[in-house]
Length: 386
Image 1: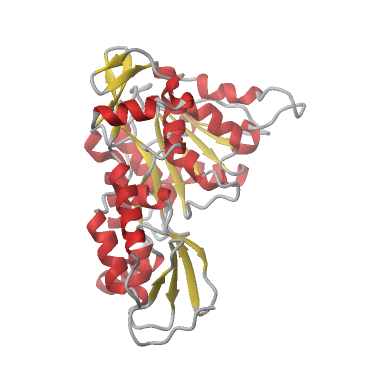
Image 2: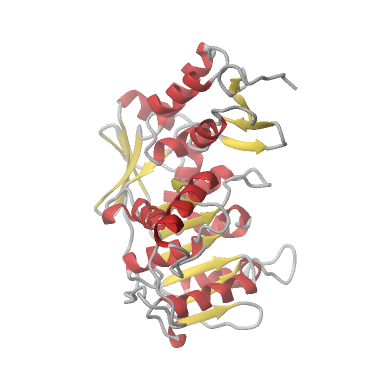
């Protein structure tokens, strides 16, 4: 382990883009919160925490609005030693790639636009990309809308993330509102950071909203954020969660804090097969099949109704078959909720390409600070305690 002391900056940036953070340093909190925006926490033993800056972590930072200069300023100002030039160059190159390719609708076709003709020619030269492209247009190509998800995944794999501005279908209308007083009689309103997450996902209904991942610490009220997004979108919603306990918690929260009725909420699990305007399903039932080489019969649930919105709870646990189905559902609005973007199977890229980039994230210390500030101003309120 590299020895560190309290003198100087709290981080050491290594040549492989691993970042070591010293806990026993007066600038630890500042560095930890800065790193959370553009690096992934790998391990956190008592004295030295290890982060890794990856292409996805940089692209997620750019997608959530963190400028390149902020990333570089954080690294250089908090580092114990000068940051190597090749690291600055690599991060700058990665950051510059986000947004150079865009997907937009043109009538019945998608169009993949590049910011320069040379880039359009470069990406079309990859066989995995070329087979998904149709007629060339100025600085780009027409694309079959059914190939939207597959194209985004392939382009991400070759190092060019697509900014998807092609929009979404509205889905079946569903009117619902959040209550100011819950059905159990408590005052309720969303906390400021939850509203900020909803705003970031929705993006005022513009083309940059409607798909992405909200990363919040455990206990931050991610279900509340999901319900806030449902209220904004006013459309039929499919919620996928890890198990029956989780979907019944969703049901209890929806019935307690929204105008939805029991008849509008269905459970699709091993025990029940209800399909209603809001349907709560488990990952287990979606990936059930009789034989290892058989079909997944319950994946048909994705097509059973004109869903306008799909919520993936604990998206870091999303099974591979659901990823494959999601690739063909890119015209549906999609929200991933999680406390971490790290997956055991290494498919973080699939989350980025098929669910969407990170739209909002909050370090646990910032959440703690906000909650402490709220409590000191208002006392122990009953509103939306996480």
